[in-house]
Image (cartoon, rainbow, N blue to C red; front, side):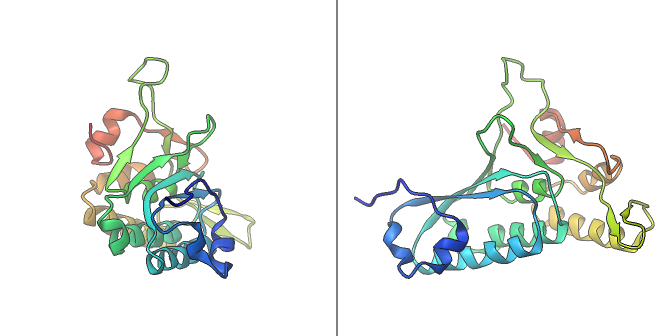
Length: 205
């Protein structure tokens, strides 16, 4: 039997001279932590390609992120949806078990990519408390002003809105989710309730 009790950062796995030594029969949990950016999306793509080449079975994506770049999040989500190694395993997305773990903003895009999406609503016995999934409207950093432009007429924000709607439409999530997300001020977080998630198609019992 292989030794499946191991952890390694993605960069170390990719540079290992013997990546198969970790045990090809092991099921792999992939953890995404911190800000979501384009370098991270590229690293994720390389990791999935390597896991596929060596016969590993990624079964879950474990998240703890306050968000980041929407384009990067969509790239990661598309890989989860379009790569064969995930199709056969019915990959699960879930939030990290640590008490302070969250999945905000662009992180929700990755959470939504799971064929199974797991959330714990029964906190302290109250099934009506909000989840740890949070949304807010986007902003584009303006270097000249050293601040974020959140105006709805911003062409970059409009482009992101179209991309998000296309992605969510493709996976069966209501496009209204993007509209409601954009209506939350950039500097606030709206924690989604169980009923809201069900209505958008992001979660089902």
